[in-house]
Image (cartoon, rainbow, N blue to C red):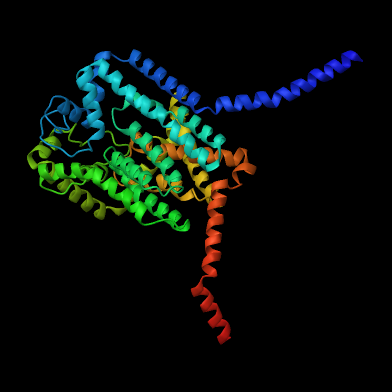
Length: 479
């Protein structure tokens, strides 16, 4: 009997400890510190393996032989923001200055075309990509709690594109992804404050982003409109505060625009390359995926035309050629846009299913399936947010719907979609939550309930406002 009591007591103690241990484990794996450390570790391990598999001399040079690296070399040598190709071509507005300036600083510290410079530039990309876990986590937490935030951050930590592009691409993609994630987090948080300094900070954030990746400007008006609408519903200064943020963002860009005007004597707000990109994606030889053909950096005849005409005239000429071709071949243009659409959402291939069947690499298949899964997940996440009438549905949907449109019309490369991928990952986490924990995700969050309650109160107040009361009285009297 005594033994039986001891067994029962031990079982009760184990049962009591089990929820405690479960909570501890959940708290441990939901730690943003742990997620960031794991994200860093994964990217460092992949980079280490990549460096050991490739000749160091090649790594010192080849990754920097594209426009961003060539401009950075010119800046590091003291020649200014010039020469996007591997020859001297004069001043350029090929891209905005933030990322080339970072690379130039790396070259000045670690040397031009050295392995240490490659490792330093890769380390910056690793840090940017890993830190993106933080705004993803807090944006998810704001939407539906710590579980969603942690799940989205873990997905980003394991996202293969955000791993591979840290060491394979010396472009601004990783920094752009971090800035886009911060913008989303700040946008969701900004509806709860009317302090001018917070809105100025939001404008500064946008200024840095536009000077890093101007394509993200496509979502700026939509986010400002959403913020104005939310402020209007809360009876806050709905026009003044977004206007302050917009003015600050524009002010951040003005020095660069002035520089471009003084150099080219033309109004170039951010960058000049749109005409060429439009032509590269829309000409008789255009075929997805684009492999660099006809680009002045690879094609000597095009490079010579660029030098002879000058950057501005060359870009205008290419833009006219592209528009003429688009108008003359609408059926082929529709096909090209469709192929680029598939490429953007499959991670770089326009034939995902045939490539999956013919490629035996398990890693390739993993990357392809991951990209296709988050494409479907983003769509389901948007549908779920709309179904539960979430106030966050609009700003999250804007990124995957609006941002890639520029690439459907021009070129589709894997790094182009990385800035929107943190939001795509977050939407996928929302979809997974809706599938595996529907009782939680179909229930609106406290912030959403408060937002909708505020709207209902405002509607009631407007219904019984003096003007509406007079109208109702007059109608009753006529009746």
